[in-house]
Image (tube, rainbow, N blue to C red):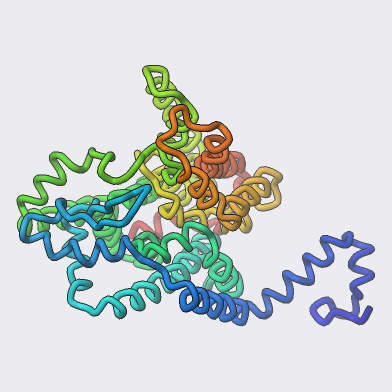
Length: 431
């Protein structure tokens, strides 16, 4: 065969002889996609637009945000119900009152405009997530690896949590982008902390980004996050005292109104164990034991990442831990799989077998749309007790991938040289 431009005068035959046929073709494909990353992203966006036009999404969660938010002042916010159909016949508003204030402008726009703007903002947020993750991979670099960011955005658009978020009109991508922008782009401690605190005031799970601030000793930013979150909550209390009291004193712990926690839609640790174990006293003991073990492994991973100043490893561990220990983490909440996969592919342990196995597990789970397949099978059943093992074990996929990621982060020993070089990154970012 002829010469391959990116490799000088080295022929494909010579590459195959040196590296083996699969690896040689992998290098060719990798080089081509890197050189044409912008075109790959353009093709992915065009395909997404075509899919939206041919199969228009039904963003039910976005409808809830838009229709329920004006009720925050009248006292009917948490009485709102969007009637859909089985297996989840109604959708209530489940976020804190401050979220309703944030969503209030949506009620003044035409529905079509809301859908288009939300889709565009969510896709842009995916690119921001990829950009910020790349910045954390190489914190000492002057600029991110543009082809890498473009290619991960291209691929990320088709991961199941991202597709589900776009189809439902969920807020996950926007909040994840806000968290990463706060922790990566903003420089002042007040700005970083305030942005993170506001994200947590909209939805509670972004608060686990505070573990990143604590692990990197950004005490001032952590204090600002707490103050901003508290201030936003106080503002909502002044604007809607009745709804705030209802939420914080009663509804915040009522997971039953959110949806069926036993469903495979719920990919938290509690959801996975609830499908594997029969209900009873033994299930509670198993839950606390599993929580303790997961916490130990996550703490071990955080310690290992901190010692080598692996910033993306710290953030991925913190956010995946939050998704695991939350009572309910729907599959569309797991948009943090993209930064996790980027760390596994390009982080300090990228050549290890554990990293490769974990990356393959994430790829199969998210790209093959495993959870939607299990949901379709589950929806043909009544509330099963016991839950069928043939569905329960695959239904642990996200939890298993998160624990494997913790192990991969923890397994990288400290070699004396930080990921980003020898500069004291934490001290710089804390100023």
